[in-house]
Structure formats: C-alpha cells, structure tokens
Amino acid sequence: VYDRVRALGQLFRQRILLCLVDIDDHGKVMVELSKLCLISQLTLICAASNKEAARYLETFRIYQNKSTADIQEQIEEDYESRLTAVMSSVRAVNKTDAKMLSANFGTVKNVFLAEKEQLSRVPGLGERKVARLHDAFNQPFKKTKADNAS
Figure 1 (cartoon, helix red, strand yellow):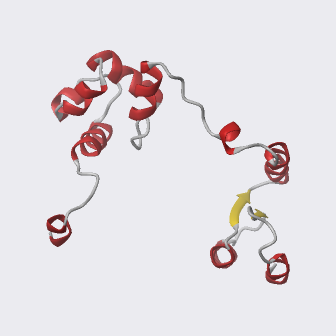
Figure 2 (cartoon, rainbow, N blue to C red):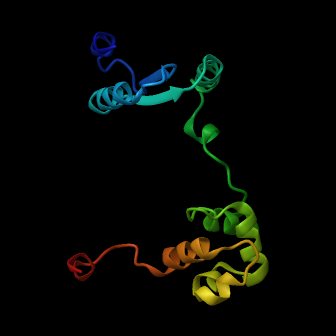
C-alpha cells in the first residue's frame, strides 16, 4: 500500500483509499492506514463488505464529473425548510424535532430566546436535546480571552 501511495504522488485532486475491512483484529492496521492517509492527504473510506465497497465505487463513478453544487444537499427556499435546516444542524436534533420546534415557537428568534424550561415542553425533546439546543443558541461563536482563562 505504501509503495502504491508513493507512486500515486500528487497526480489527482481527490485521492481516496477504499479499504475493505474483512479481518477481526483490524485495530492496528486501521491506525496505520489512518496515519498513511493523513500524511499523504488521502481520504480513507472503510467498507465492511464487498457489496458496500462496490456501492462506493459505483457512487464515485456516477459523481466523478459532477460539480459540487450537484452533490451538495439542496435546501428549499421557503421559511419552514430553512428553519428545519438551521435547527437540525444542532447535534442530536433531527428534522422531526425541528418541525416540532417550529410548530411550538413559530420563528427561529423565538426558539433562540426560549429558556430550557420552555424547550423541554416540546414533545420529543429530552434533557440532552434541550441542553444542546440551549447551549448552541446561548454560547458565543467566538471564545474570548476571558473564556480561555477559565
């Protein structure tokens, strides 16, 4: 593998190492392959079966000449879709949760201003989701020197 990666050089913009993980004790091997990919600027993709590896290859082949705009998720322009996209970007919050937040609060602003107690009343939101939502909307985007000192 090392010789083939070395021979590959920098010939391609996108370089992928597709690895079929078919042995039980794969931990050490995967660590070494991860290091190799990091150093060589390769993307490591692991497949658990021949069928999964084939699916990756088929997908790469289909998208090889597509632009990034064709591949990226398209978000509708209506308010509800954009609100759902914003809310579901918070870890552990899915589209159903986002729709429930929209139904209960109406606007993004109202969700941002909601207290934990108000968020916890939304069906489907447990303590963890409430905490993550509240933290995501109330922590500063950029840490200050005072934040780093504590």
